[in-house]
Image (cartoon, rainbow, N blue to C red; front, side, top):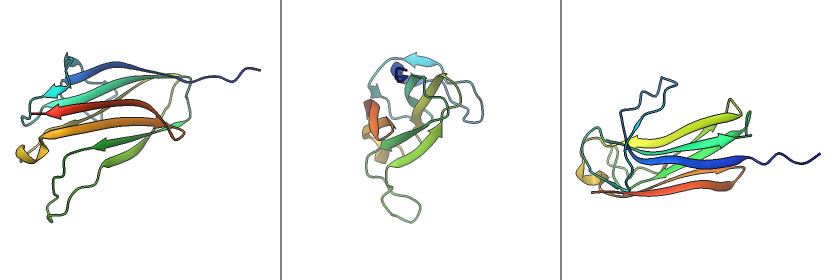
Amino acid sequence: MPKIRPEFQMISYGIYTAWNRESKELPKIIRHTLEIPAGVGVEFGFILSVKKVKGEVLEFCIEHPPFTDEEGEVMPPFEGTYFVNSNDFRFFLGDTVWEPVEDKKGVWTLTVSYQGKEVARKSFLLI
């Protein structure tokens, strides 16, 4: 019996409508771009189509410019996992610009991995 090969395809990337993380609805693309205006509330990232991976876990990482938390410590990259609950799944990975905006400017690199292998990567420049 042949092994089922997972499929990953980036559907869109750039600036999106605000995303309600509690909703199943993904944000809508406003503009495809890699240059993101550094304004409060600007949502950016990408949508990844994931097929034939039901019941598996995706790992994600958001590398960002060196800004600090409330205690003055440099924030590490944002990392996490996401459980895929269907055979035809769409995944949004992104972030929203917040105050203070100046320390958020620079390169943000978003990656998704599956079983230790990178399956999607996109770098955005906040200007």
